[in-house]
Image (tube, rainbow, N blue to C red; front, top):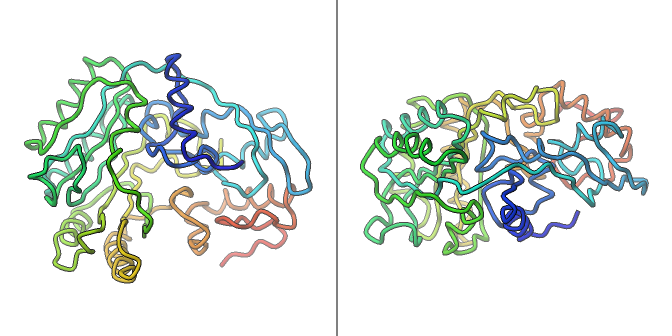
Length: 360
């Protein structure tokens, strides 16, 4: 399926006009096909599950040119594999999604000063919140964005984007717990149409350089929090032009209620998705930013319990089995053998066909 970066925003706006939604992610500039085949984590995940969980069927062209309709009844092995196994099995030309009711949400941006206690408390509250709340936290020096007051630019903070998709009064009470953690640097939370969430960072410049290391975890301990705060506050912080950050996505809710074996997304019981990010730096300064990401990733590596396919790419081949635990990988390799035995679809985080699959 050809990727259209604006399609997700267009589709969300069109369905929301009828008070319906597909739970895509949180970026308007990522294609529909990629996020769906890799799983799909975003602002509605705790309430509605992964994007892949809303797929009812696809049309797919296999390596030998067959056009298949794939769902729970037709080619169920392939239907299992494409929901989390990425583009390893064919070219998806059409998705059929289940739509979910959606009305106005409580959402937007909240920024609080970054301290160890603030980070710990925010993660704890977001993890314990009802499923209606999905939160993404960015520990960073606040960038010069329209949602950030000018006097706070460069201040170390936790920048939270969140969506409450339920009764707004109940959401205000839950969000009030987050607001109470520390005095807000900026608070732009309120009722809004869900599609407007994609417009929050419309003033951000395009990022053409990006180094990211992400992992799934069950906790964020004091050692990791200390390393995050220390390395974001060091003189050797990546250049002023770059965004240097640690992103924390609190999982759980509807993601974890789907049986692990139901799809190829195998990390449903994990509680956190963590990413160390440097983006928007000059090409000539890439090595320094890679070293910074590697250093902070090493300092938090003890928490890692897997990886999320959509935050990896073909260059991360050595991490393939972090995305796919052994039972999942063996099952995927067998599906690959049936539908793509010559491994035509290999320009990805590649699943080898079963007969040539080798542990490395």
